[in-house]
Image (cartoon, rainbow over all chains, first blue to last red):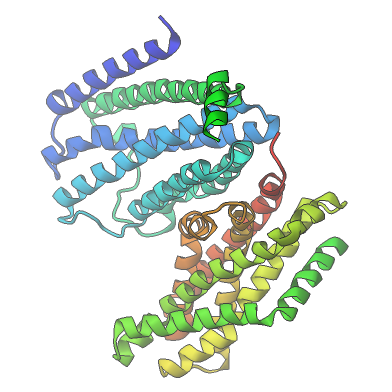
Length: 227
Length: 225
């Protein structure tokens, strides 16, 4: 069994167990009640989106440093997975916000910065689509590094500005029955994310090789005949 | 440093010779300010309260025009390729272009701020006016650094006019927030001594992006492997 498939299966298993524990084993939160259970996917989505943006930043530096296209393949995988998790994070946060604050959206700094972060990295993917093949890797890396400077803002803004979000809890202040499903889901999403990243990088590599390969003779014949 | 000044002088000379282009950026900022006023209605109190936001949005929208133009002239006759073939460091080229863009955007301040004072009946003395222009200049510097880097890339795209705002606007949200808040405190009082924090945020953004974009500029303008 290859590494990618093993990671995906392990991640899926952990996610199923963690979600079951979060829904049926962990106690309800004292103030928010049952709705707090969305935390078991919301917080892992946030952690892993941040982690994958950090991977993308590392890949971007490696891509510029070495000039090897493999780093760019990984970069696009990391950014795409992180963007999906970032979008899920906002949807889950919106549902949670409606139940606890009574509104779908609040201009809370961390929410707003998460949205800005999504737009920033969606911009990286847009630029990538627009760029020519020779410039795609360099420009993607440059835009990723520039966008990543925004990421610490997301993490630390809860301390920098007033925010509706609570200050991050530590495991010591949280019931162990809540900590375990949270960690299982976090690791599960991470493993799934890495498997997805690897799959996406493999697709990008195949696409690059296809583009670099000489045109098949039948295509040239067809185009010549057409002309 | 001499190279930076030479390219900066070249850019400023070009701006001076093609004054119509510079004037079009000024007019665009003025029209934007007027449009915001029409959109909100003739309520002077509401217009006055919204002044910082209108000013910064006028700056932000005009910046895309100025940044796109600054690289369009470099693309004509392949002037940028010519510059890159000379023993001119790409970092020096970045700082010269970014300084020229920051200067051009800062020069909009007297016109647009002056117009806002008249249109919205703002009662401001010279210190507050200087404060507004200072906040504008910090905001302009924050837009110029990443804007110059991104404009260098997007100027090679057919979708240049769309690509630059998509990339730049989310990035400069801290500049927008910082400038609006700082201008608001300058205009309407700073009872809680918050101005320094917002100015520090703007300065931090400026320092980080002027450094990062200076390093990355060569990858934006030079051909890939």
